[in-house]
Amino acid sequence: MLQLSSRAASLLDQARESQGIPEHFGVRVYGEAAPQGGTAIGIAFTETPEQGDEVGEQDGTNLFVAPEVAGPLAEALLDAEESPEGVRLTLKTAPE
Image (cartoon, rainbow, N blue to C red; front, top):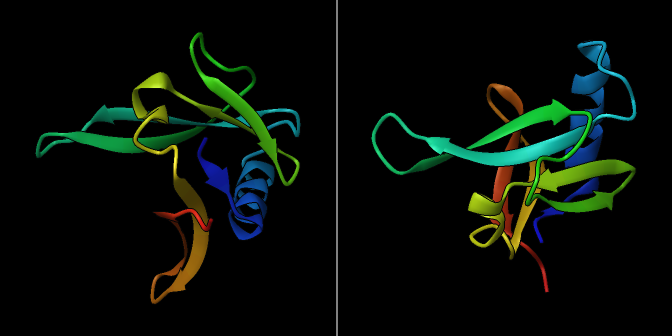
């Protein structure tokens, strides 16, 4: 299942708080059609998983991964890193 780094969990927690979203809401990772074709990854806060979602908890964050991206992201890590534009979420290969 997709893993969530402590840095990403902290960043998502800060975003949730700044938007006034209740603490018990989780993060849902899902696929959506990309404008140039293929699939883009979407991330949203939601109270409950949708049917078929993989469900987990990492660093105090409930994580719901939609079935259309669960397979491709099974060995991935959602991390946060500094960029010239500020902190951003990135997908990386999960450490063994």
